[in-house]
Image (tube, rainbow, N blue to C red; front, side):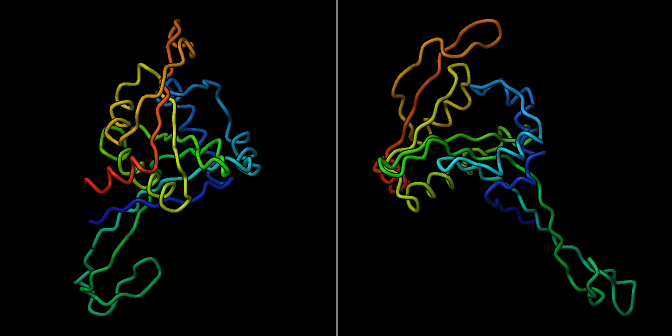
Length: 204
């Protein structure tokens, strides 16, 4: 069985998936904005994305080998296509993994803000690291970004540890920025420079 990740720009037809992921409590309470949005609202927003904003949908494609039906002497059908009996066929399935956020793109100063929302069942399994590896390579090596930054809630220790492993540095703290669970908590500002990313990649 082979698994691979695919990234593609989000389209209005992806709105139901994106809205459901955002409105899931495990996702929503880790965001800086706890407003819930409907699929219809999300569809309109995706259709009119600002010039400095990108959304990429992450899919996992799973390919598995299946043997043909050896009991039939002539042919078996696979997805409407004929296959010789006993021949190995490959079936592929696709599953929604999450959405990548790229905001506040500044093409003059070459920086942008990033984020990632993963479907709950894909969390804690290394997917976030794999997605960020792709995203950082794309932004630094192909979009010529000089600096990438993000904000993370101080209580989100899993995400903070991931960002540290990726090479992000803490630049500052926005004190009591967000109201969660009946109290205020701070937001951590972190960034990664292109030279730091290149050095980390070279070292690995």
